[in-house]
Length: 365
Image 1 (cartoon, rainbow, N blue to C red):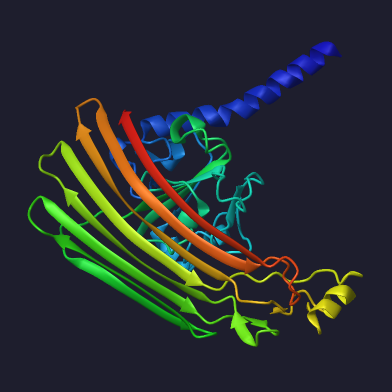
Image 2: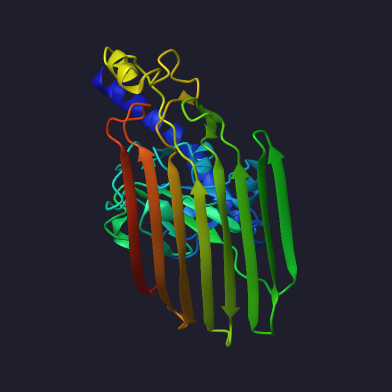
């Protein structure tokens, strides 16, 4: 019985390995000219250009065509294209939580750096208020799953969202996109690129995004949860020699909108007390998804995010030297009715935050 089992196992092993050997022989005998590299996806998840198949990291890539087809406006919309990514908008425009594979710290404290690091053209965005603006002229977005502390810093303990924008081109070109939707939603984006000389190219882009509020503040008799944001971005590309490349980037984004309502899930016994203090209805106790709220005053979100970066790449032959220097500032002023009722219980919660960030990366690969 034992000998029979051994012979049967050996036969099954030979049957399983024979097709693999034949496949390897067929591949080796195929002419090299028949190999098609036209559909390879090039990523920089390991801080160097590699095909997606050769990259030893769990990474999802969203191309510019996918972003346009899916109408992805900002990082909050990106979760519709990346299954392992979840983006939660909290009680203000400055508080957004990024979660990859179920891991990610909260963003209600502006003093905490998110555990999902966001990089745009190699520059780290240290706070969520500096990450949620409309996406620039994007070439691709790479979402790296799992800890990436070795190459992206200790703060990237849950993953990385790396946005790569298009470089300036030496041929004149550009694009304009405009759309209109319900609640008077109006979005327009445009960019232009071209040469300044044989060795200098530029690009300039801008975006504007507005929409009326889709929720109703019954106590103040006004619409809330609107959208009002715009931004500009400029680039210069210098290539004085074949070995030296210098890329300068500057951008400015502004958000000034009323966000975000908090629906009442359970109408507990304290509702009668708040109704008495408010002299009338204080919350919508019937339907948490009615988009009807009762507040003392309107929430406000004023966010200014701006900065500049310079990247220098020098080809040393067998190695390449890269330097990325950046300075960024985030100014955030948010105010909201903290008890989320028409009764004046807790009052205002005003947060005025200023974050200045300087980063320097020097890489030899």
